[in-house]
Length: 239
Image 1 (cartoon, rainbow, N blue to C red):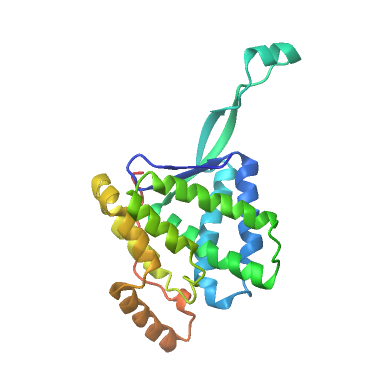
Image 2 (image 1 turned 180 degrees about the horizontal axis):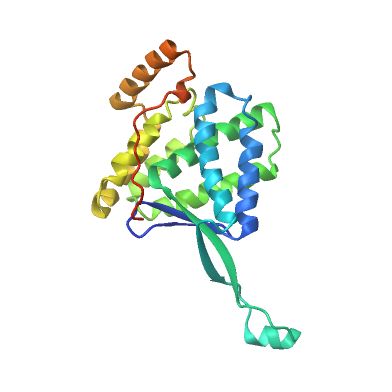
C-alpha cells in the first residue's frame, strides 16, 4: 500500500510502497498527463509532475531507500501451509520536498479535469482513481502538520474547479523549495501552511517573477517553462 509520511525534519515527505504500488502510480500519472504535445499551456506543470515520476521510477529500481514492512504472515499461517516465507515485504521509498509535493497534488487536479473533459469522462477511470488516492494520501499527511483552519483552507483550494496551473511559472516552485530548505524544523512547522497557500495564490512575488520570465521568453523566443533561473540546490538535504 502506498504510504506518505513527513520526514523527521519536516523537510518533505517520504513516499513509499512496493514495486507495484509505485508502478501503478507512475503509469496513472503518465496516462492522465498525456504526451508532451497535449495541454501545451500546462507543460511547465506537467514537467514538474514527471520529475516526481522520475524519482519514483528510480526508487522502484532500488536506487533510493529500502524499507521492510510486515506482510501479516504469522508462524501459524506458515505452519498451516507448510511453507518457509519471509514475514516482511520490501518497500521502495524516496523523499520529496514539501512545496514540490504540494504543487504536484494541486497540479494533478488540472490534468484530471482535462482528461475527463477531453479523453474519458467515466467515473470509474482507474487511472484517475489511482491519482485521487495519491492526492488523498498527501492531504492526510499534510493534515497532521497543519492546524484545523489551515487544513480546511487547503482543502477548499484543492477542490476548486478553477485551473491553478494554467501557464504557471513553475520556476516559483524552485524558489519556494529553496526558501523552505533554508528554514529549521520549527520554522517549517510554523510556515508550512503559508507555503501551501503561496503555491495556490498568485502573490506579488509570483507576479513579479512571472513578469520577468515572460520578458525573457519573448526575448529568447522560448516557452515560459523553459526559462532557467538560478536555483542551486544543496548537494545534500537533511530530511
